[in-house]
Length: 134
Ligand SMILES: [Zn+2]
Ligand SMILES: [Zn+2]
Image (tube, rainbow, N blue to C red; front, side, top):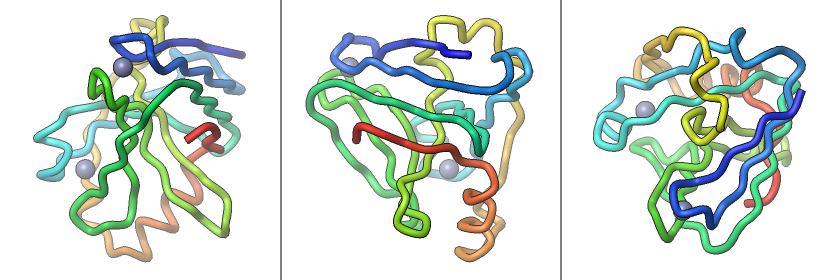
């Protein structure tokens, strides 16, 4: 299944390929200080393919410097979160960019700040999809 979307200003197009419908995803909202300041909900699964295509990008790193937060440099929408795992770029997409975001399941709050760096990377390896185009 393919779902499409874009950032607010349309500079970035997002295409997500998944093996289950959006309704089966529970978007994750992170409770760390960084994410509280720029709220977002993300979705991913290991088989997900996230293709981003667009113009300029701003990359921020969160508190522990592990994950990259990719933003449209024009409207500042979060596009995706990602990092290099075993030299493959893996990530999760901002669920609100998708046109069919209203089909998504219930949002759940996660607390990755309680995890160590190793635990986070282990978790992302099991949760995140393949991220292209950034
Ligand atoms: Zn934009
Ligand atoms: Zn966070």
